[in-house]
Length: 387
Length: 226
Ligand SMILES: Nc1ncnc2c1ncn2[C@@H]1O[C@H](COP(=O)(O)OP(=O)(O)OP(=O)(O)O)[C@@H](O)[C@H]1O
Ligand SMILES: [Mg+2]
Picture: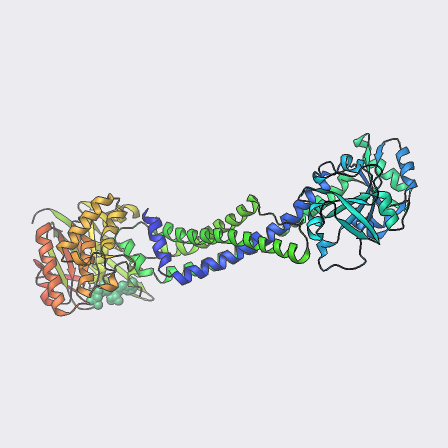
């Protein structure tokens, strides 16, 4: 392969310049891949929890209307447990599950990830609402349980909780009876306890913060949610699908940001390689004139320059993907070691690598075309005169 | 004269720069036969380089025509003209114009590689040419590791690689000292008779011009045959 051989040797003749160019483009791609992988991690964490829940309608205190998530609900308010019996009376409601959520904020830990979200639940919550969660060791909650807990894998790791161990909560000892398998979602940061035990610990007997509801006729879920919201002004009922729609909007915004970021990396890459290639071609005018004189086709010269550009950007793309992978590992490390956020692992997916390599290929092509065209169209006699 | 390699008819090249029009080559009729060694001499600016560029298809005439081995070069597509230069002509430059990243051997194999000659064949050919030109000990040297005379010999080997029928040399000894000049001139004469290859040589050096079988004098874009 004359083309590849020539291209490689041309790149090798200015090693430092070639390496600096590769480094510049690789850095741009690394950051893109790194940041994309973090944001993918957040997205997949959402998708692995919220999107899988087996509820059709979510009820939260009216104060949490805009952010109908258990952790937000825990911080802003509660409503009386007696409502749940009335809600169950509604014709389209099949089941409603009482949840009392709390976030222990008495002393701020040095790692945010070490703050658990405490969910007071009834045993059927596991089978009906979060059936996708799998038990790692021990057991799930049972009727008649006292001060016990089942913890998500992430929070167990950060808090150093082990089966049979205890956690002190408002002067009460809770025994760990089960640890869940990692789910890759936000549930890994949750702790589940019997609802009465948690309510007592917080002196909130008879109060709820969150109620997942199953309906009989899913087609009428929206109507039912509206009915609940209208009847009890202190609570807000929203369908799971409308909550997910909001998340999907969020996904769209994040994807747009990905696109913007990739475009910036693309532009940086193009500018780097373009300036290098223009320089490289500028100092080889006479040589290329000679090649043309001895019979090399214009097209070959064009292909040669584009090949050089492609090779530079492909090496940069590969290095950038590797760099991005290492960057995401570093961020994972920082997140878990310093922040304790073990369940927000960046995702380095094939899609992200494909974006990295895709940017590299586009860069190589776009940055190579102009210098290639410029040198290939140069008049042979003029090129031979060039010093 | 025997078979004709190249023949020009009323060949003219006019350069327009601003208001002025310069007829660098002005109605030249020139015929070079197979194996003929022609030297072209004349004052600076008389159009020697321009004429050679036209003969080699590096530049296009303003009017007139060139027949190369019977083919009208003006009617060839760029690709075919490239192929003509690649396979039927060899170019030797005053400044050698070798590829600096290539060894002597690679510089000589390059035109053969472009022409699609198989690897073994081109290596054998390049080695035999370099050996013939006295460079058997220098085949892995790069241009910067070779003397001027050696570089010009590598360039000659490169010009001969695809067995052309015409060598075009524009002041090939212009950058060489007198001893090396003599050497290169003698070499060209030897190759001319050995391979029966036609040579068009532009030179300012009378001694070099004398190795040719015919000398043309160029003045103001015209030939004065002697
Ligand atoms: N590209 C060009 N544009 C305009 N004028 C040109 C161009 N090339 C050559 N000329 C003019 O054409 C004339 C002939 O130039 P050419 O280079 O052929 O001369 P030469 O005989 O080779 O001279 P020298 O012995 O100095 O090399 C000169 O007057 C030169 O100025
Ligand atoms: Mg000249």
